Length: 534
Image (cartoon, rainbow, N blue to C red):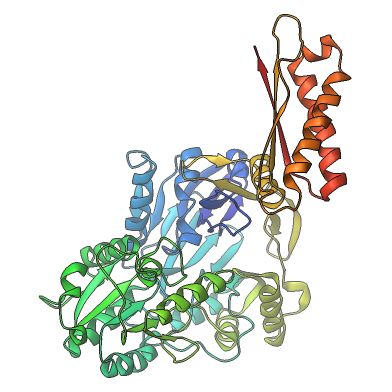
């Protein structure tokens, strides 16, 4: 959930506004965005500048723009992805989307001048930002690696970095994702030979799954397929969307006649087709996950087919990917992952590249960003190895307010941060609601239904107890009978006045039932009293 505010007085620019996907503990939540309350009172926001189009950098843009109508700056590919998200939120007619000039002409936003330099990453048109402020220059690397020969030719100009170092850089904010990996991250072109080797030797259909945004990977796979006489079918909504946008902008090319519909591809000889499919993270609704359980409308896996998993496993997704692989193997497919063959490379710099970035820029202060704390700390160690004293390296947490002057950088306070949960309706899910969902998932649900005469407060019939989540609990039927007696006793001890107050009556039933189930089962189900007035 990357989001950075740079502020001088009441003038601000925002860099990126990302989201993250929920974990298993986020029941019923579709996306998680940052708490954006700070932006309501942080002064004049002259613009939102996007470094690239990954969801953890642009996913919260619609929510930010719903609060603050500010211009959005980015490369054409990034803005095309943003435009799709704004369309989902009915925001297209609101904010101005302004492309960063391809020749790198600086943006003038309030007191800030921002220059965007091309940088290699795992998505097209990524940018490193040089932010010139009244007190000095800030370099924000965004996600990067120093690939000297990227497919699109947009390598970071190391001489330009060196010139920045000569001019003087006040602070370097640098990607820490691979700070615990030694050496240099291989370039994107290195995956072509192993991918081609697997495709060339495959006796039947080939399925390649990768991140849909890794357009350069997709282009290499398309070229390999054409070289070996295979038609290409694109399967999955995300893959189709990225392919369509990339083709429209001239970033992805299919030779004439190469692409076919998935249903048509299934009727071709198996050795003459390759499928590009979504599902590298094993998402249950993704194309490959459905294909793996024979649940896709047009495409199926058959004995002898080959699946190439050309992506990393995002931490937390290992189990879902493992289940998908098991299903693929049961259907007779062979599966090759990045652990078996070098068919995937990271889009982030490793330690030696981080060291080179620091040596070229020669910043006065270093702030490691983008990573878990262990990676930020490893990056700080790299900075010290480059000669920066510990006093000039700041390890910051989300929400830290960093005060930067010409001579100092320190944590000067905190601003409100945290996670905001969004469900499928695009509405916020409050923490209390999420807590209730977790309680139901962990300990079950008890509903106590009591009928009360509206006129005199007397009970009408026996109370009813219904449960969900106690399935398999030994003696459940007897337990619920005892719970019914607890309710009856609680009601018998209440006055007519208490029974006429629905709030008081519900609270008493909740208290008695919570105490009963905690004592008898050591579980804390969610108790929902229902008072029916007759």
